[in-house]
Image (cartoon, rainbow, N blue to C red; front, side):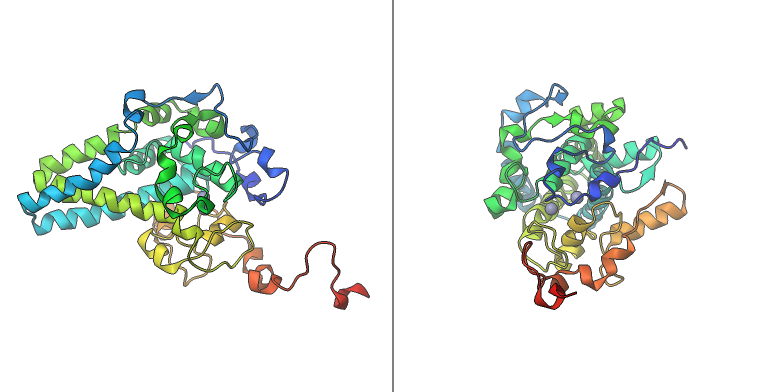
Length: 336
Ligand SMILES: [Zn+2]
Ligand SMILES: [Zn+2]
């Protein structure tokens, strides 16, 4: 297998609140230009199919109504099994593909498996892998600040779904994901991002008929959407903060179960280079476990672990809470 020439994305460890960081690069980012606070599309902007985006939220709303037709068709247990299977398979595509590979480049793989990851992720109908990764990189630069595409301080509904329909969030600025935009097959798949979900929908129809499409495809797609979206909304609202990440990211065990490990979101915002997001053994991260198996099979490699310093209790928020603000010297240290 030929390795994709993924570069080290160590620059993403720069704390997002650092003043210089807004103008710094992203993951491979040695090539990525500054991201201004106002997100102006560059000349590398890949425009989506206009006819689709002019429809706004209409297809999204209709997709939520489609499974209701199953009340007329009836369902079989196989449809529900397909629903569960496709939920977990596509959630893996979202977390291992869209997030930990395309957005953060936390591990390496072959060009073929890279394409497979993009295709699998895109069967969840969350737009192209390049679109997803490019927007997510901005989220980490400007987390919960103006310019964050799904700024959670704009409210639950905005960060959960509202941001998806904001006009400036529709295009893919390829200059923000140059490290992957050099692969024409990914650019093609990003442009025709509805191809993978269409292939999957037709396949479920051929396998199980109408009720399989309604429950196996559409209902599990809705679950995958909202499961993913909770990380943009609830993972910035509900849970605990182990690290001072200068944003509202939280660790939430329940969301980690729903999303195969993505709920350890404060861990992730603290050290986004790590493939593993559940830093401790009890922090369930099934995406990481599966990637470990794939690494044993040599399908992926160079999986990144959290550094030793994240386990140092002095770096945890409870321990740092008593540290006085800059400019104020703690009495116990003043005489030292
Ligand atoms: Zn991330
Ligand atoms: Zn976040």
